[in-house]
Length: 272
Picture 1 (cartoon, rainbow, N blue to C red):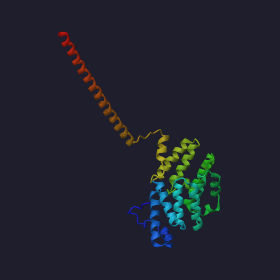
Picture 2: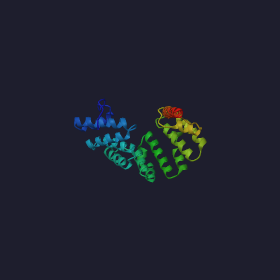
Picture 3: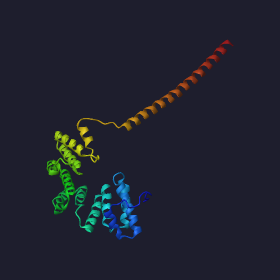
Picture 4: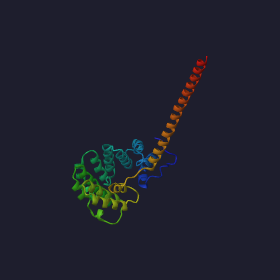
């Protein structure tokens, strides 16, 4: 995989750079560049990010940060079995619990929501920081919805973090998930309220709460780009019609001229 010239490898997190110090300098540089590309592309081009992660894994599969990056790249491409294997490998290497929520979500992706719920009740959850515990709550609520337990999903999301007025990095997603669960349960009025609260907390546009709220209010958005395309298509059709009409008129005039010439010949014959 080609690496852009502006990528030096120094862009990676200092903790990851420290992990790579166990590798020869040239190899560490190559691995770090590929990890930079994974981080750069994982949201906008997950397939390419996955390809870069495979290069990094081939070069340094015994580095926990590389296994973790490979897991997230596979996860972004819905390769849940592969992602889970990489996350487990990274966890064995580090002994940490940070990946516990995303591992549980992989279980959901593999059609095993019951396993995800088991993980939500495991001792590892108590070792997570606040962000991790909120993430685990989101995964557990999703598992409940997978099992058509809407009321249980709603209760799962009801927490001090949801009720808090302070805005944290997870607030918008938590409020959005709660609104979505309420809407699925037919509680439209409450859902509208929580979509609005999600918008208040969503400073970086991490959810589409504004679109969901607009849908509930009956507002339809028209893409200006699509409008321009339609106008251009309309112009093209008019031009085609004019050209076709011109051809038809030309043929008619030619036919008329031939008829006039025939009439003149007939008149000359009559005179003779």
